Amino acid sequence: MPDSYELRNHKRLQLLSILIAFASMSGCSKSGSINEEVNKLLSSTEMTALSVVLVTEGNVRTYHYGEFADGSKPSDDTIYDVGSITKTHVGIVLAQAVSDGLIGLDIPISQYLSTINSDALTFQDTEITVRHLATHTSGLPTDLSCANANLTPNERFMCFNNHDDEDLFKVLNEYKLQERPGSKYQYSNSGIRIIGLILEDLYDTTIEQLLHDVVFKSTGQIETYTYLTENERVRWRRGVHESGLPTPDASGYFNAAGGLKSTARDMGKYISFYFNSDNQLAIQDISVTDGR
Image (cartoon, rainbow, N blue to C red; front, side):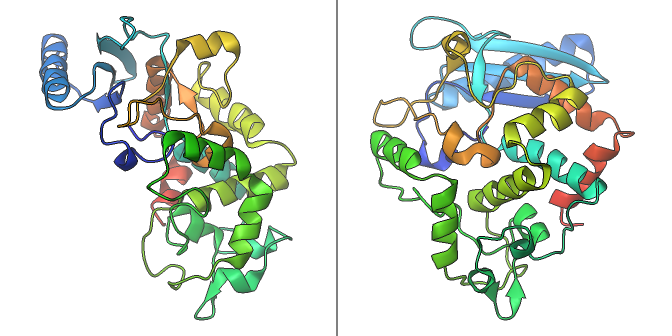
C-alpha cells in the first residue's frame, strides 16, 4: 500500500504494509493461502509486520503477522498510513458533488478556482478539466512542490511545512504544461489536491468534514482519520526511510491526495462498501476514476 509520498521513494520500507485480499475460498483454505502469501512477502522484503484484510461475501476478517521494531505486534487497533487510497475516498465526494449538480466533469477547473490563471492550465488550446484531474491525465506532475527525490526525510518534512494550499496555487499559476490535457496518463498528487480544494469551496467546508459526512457515514468507517489525537498517535505505526529515519507525517501537505490514516478493520468496511452493487455513489466513483 502506498505511503504518503509514494513507496518508490522508500524501497526499504521496513515497518508495515496492509495487504488487501479478495477471495471466495472455503474457510480452511483462506487462512492457509493467506499464511503462504504473507510468509513469501515477509521473507522476500524487509518488512517485519503485516496486516491482511480479507473481504468475502460481505464478511470482513483481519489477520496480523510479525512485530514492529519496538517488539509490539500489529492488531485491529493499529493505525497505518493508507496513502493514496485517500484519493478513492475523495472520488466518492466528487461523485456526490456531481450527483448534487455542483460540478461538471468536463468543465475547465479555472471556472471553480477564481485565483487560477487559465492560461497556465492550457496546452494546445485544451484546458485542464475536472475529469482530467480525476483520471490523472491533466499533464500536471506527480507533485508541484517537494518532489525532489534526493530530499532527506527531515528536508522533505520541512518542505511539507513550508508549502500550503496558497503556495500550491502560486506554483500552479507559474507552471508550464508540457502535454495536452487528456492525451497522456501521468500520476499526479497535485491534481487530486486541487480536486480537494475545489470540493471544499463548493461545499464551503473542509475535506475532512466532507469525508466524514459523505464517505464514512456511508461506509461505516469509524477509525479512519485525517489528523490524529495524542491517544491515536500512540497506535500509529509509520514507515522507515532507507536512512533509518521514520517517514514524515505528510497528512497536512497531501491531504486529499494521501493524508488518511486507518486500521485494517476499517479498510475492510471500505472494501465492503464497493462490493455493494446497489450503492450508486460507489458505482459513479468507479466510473469517474475509470475515465467514463
